[in-house]
Length: 349
Ligand code: FES
Image (cartoon, rainbow, N blue to C red):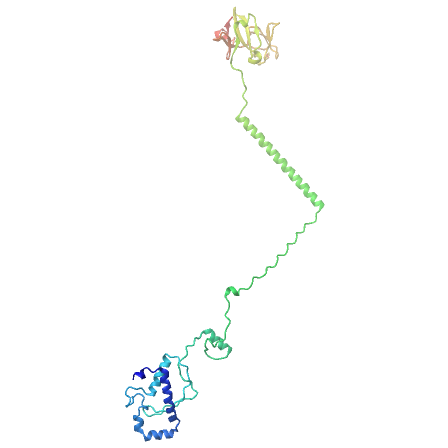
């Protein structure tokens, strides 16, 4: 028993084939003979352990029969071992346990052997079907080699050559017309001249307006002489003296003369009482003579001829702290009003 357990599947198959040959001889017998033999020995066939594979042989307890071994081998081969599918020999018609003859298998029928573990894919199947070489699914090894489409990057067409851009045709210049050009030149000159004149006048007007505005903000200021000024000491004005050197600058005559029995030094205003002209001192005639209308005034300023209506006016005069005579033009004195009697209107000589 220990040796039988160690038997490999190949050995078991070899043994089964050897017994199968013997059984084949029996199967090769004519069916009539076989049936007769079976009829003659019903008990032997019924009792035979070979006829009933399920029951073990009486002489060999636990030893499997050939059929069992075959069944085991086929089941193992189909389940696990990839044994090459050899066409099975047609088995002889054998009776089943019930005595019915088993249907004889077709000699050309494919034996359901162990399926090959063949890898098939859809591409190979489709290629084979299209080529018509072999209908039905084919193995990957049998399928014709189909060129796989290249990658997208490789399938990109080469860039189109960019044709050079045609050169832009030169714009045709219109033919020059001498008359038209002359008219255009004249119009342009005239318009330009008018515009130039307009802009010039506008700029001049703006300049004048700016000057007027500046004059308004910064008016001219006449530099008038001070209202008070010194004319020197009394000794510089002797009796009967008419000093005319302050006429042009200050409009004043400084006179040392007698008025109403009093010798006085006073300052007469050089303005004619008629219409404002400046009279002249006539040393030879000892009078003031107005050149405008002929009015005449004595040395003390009393009017005696001409249209002058009244005597000349006096300014205030006094002896300053330094002993000099100081004339103040801010104050004036009129004789017809009796103001010449004011002590500010004269200095006693
Ligand atoms: Fe002197 Fe007329 S202004 S006389």
